[in-house]
Image (cartoon, rainbow, N blue to C red; front, side, top):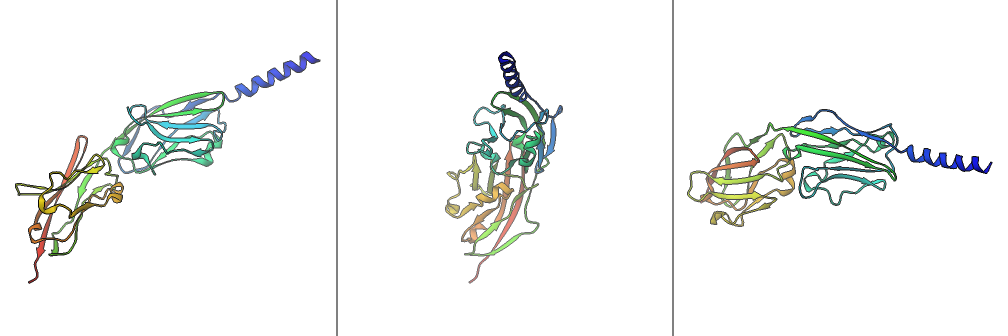
Length: 257
């Protein structure tokens, strides 16, 4: 009788251990998405057991530095070490975790999102992962005002420029210049910061981007206390990797006597 009880306990423990054995499955082919759209990166458990108590980690293994895209651990999202460009754009389907669905929703896809993603799931006694490939079609263009901008000297002016579709420009280069002049730099943003060491003297302290709006594709520049010498053609130039585009804006300054 004692032997039977021991065997039952061993068998029960074995069943509990193997019951968590699972396989992580995902798409067989790359996911193709246009920049600006949302995409769901499929990932799930087989069999469809609950992943509520497990760790779900999405990373970019093709990156050399920070690789974290999204981390679910101890029943909550833990994204304090998340890659900056993914902040506010990733989400799990929490109600689906109990069905083994660990897919990730990625909002407002950017060109930099193209690459390899790894969905890794870990329980107390088991681990498995799968790779998901994402291809981003970049159909971007830079747009600006259709007509000239007219402003009175002394007033502030916003020179409109934005991306279509409205994807983030935070990791792009944004350059505003004055056309047809020897010195041309009005404002330069690159590597997540302003770089205005070579800015024209007359524009120093008078130009600024709307930093919070960059994530929405708004690359407009604000020009404070407009001067008569500000009249002329401006160019908003945006570059990301091998892609670039620009738009021209004409400013007419009215002087009151």
